[in-house]
Image (cartoon, rainbow, N blue to C red; front, side, top):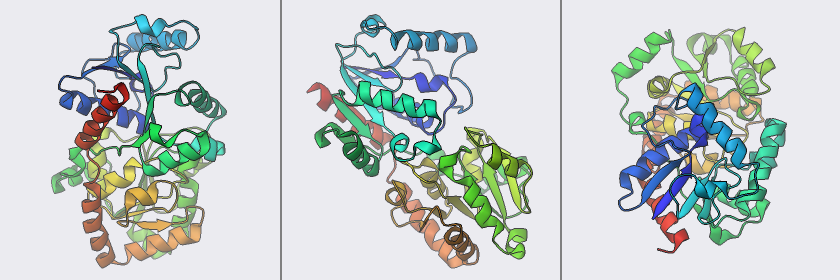
Length: 370
C-alpha cells in the first residue's frame, strides 16, 4: 500500500498543524513496514521543525506553492499524474486530490464554525471550502480528539463511521528535560525570577488579553514574586494585545517566538503553565507542559478537559476573576502543585507519536480494505 500525504503545511508559517504533520509523518515512516509513505509534493527529505520558516529553501517553497495554486484551480486530475500513484491521498491543503486514490484528511478543530470571529475571514473561507470539497466526500477522517470528532459529526453532518479519534503525540524531549536544560533556557532568556508561563500564537482564540487582565489583578506582592512570561509569535488581529505585551505592566515579560529546542526547558522551568484558550481541537501546550512536569491551568471547554483529564485546573476562560483566583491558589500552594505535577506526568503518557502512527496505519489499511 502506498500513502501520499499532503505536506504543504511544512512550507508555511504554522504552529499546531505543522507540529502534528512533522512528527506524525516521521513516526509513520519509522513504523510503515510494507506501507510506502510519500510526502506531497516532493518533500521526502529530512527536515528540521521550525514554525516560522519553510522546511525547504525559498525557491523550492514558491515552486511547490505554485503547484498547489494550480492544482486547486483546474478541474482536471492533475494530481493523479504527479509522483507515484497512491492508494490513499491524505490531504491538508490540496482541494483537487488524485481521483483514483482513497481520500482521507485530519480534522484538527471546528473553530471557523464555532468561533469565526477569532479567525481571519480568509481562514474561515478556506476551512469551509475545504469541508465542502474534501471532508464531505472523504472516505475516512482522523479527528485529533473525541471532542473534535463529535463537533465534526454535529456541525458538518459527517457519518460517525467515517471519523476515527486518534490522539496526537508528544516528543520524548518533553519527558526528559534535565535541570541543566532549565538553567540554560532561563539564562538564555534572562528569566531570573519564578514565572507563570503562557506559550502559543498571540491571536484572539488564545485569549491572551484576559490572561493579562487576570494577572494584573493579582496583588503587587504576588506579581513581584512571580513573573508572567508570554512566549509565542504574533498571529492575526493582535495589535492591541501586542501593544500591551511590548509595553507591559509590572511583572510581564514577552519573549516572542521561542525556538523549538528551548520549549521543553521553558515549560519545565515554569512554576505553572496557564492556557485560557477559548477553543482547542487538541491543545499541544497542555500536554507538553504536563510531560515536562509543570502544573497546568486551562479552560474547561472544547477538547481541553479531555486532554487535561483531571490532571489540571479548569476555569471559565471568559472569567478573569476565575482565572486570577486559579493562579493565586496554585502559586500559594506547593502541595497542590506537587499533586498536579504527578498527575500531569502520568496523564501525558497517554499521548505517544508511536501509538498515533500505529493507529493511523491501521486506519489507512481499513480505508483501503486491507
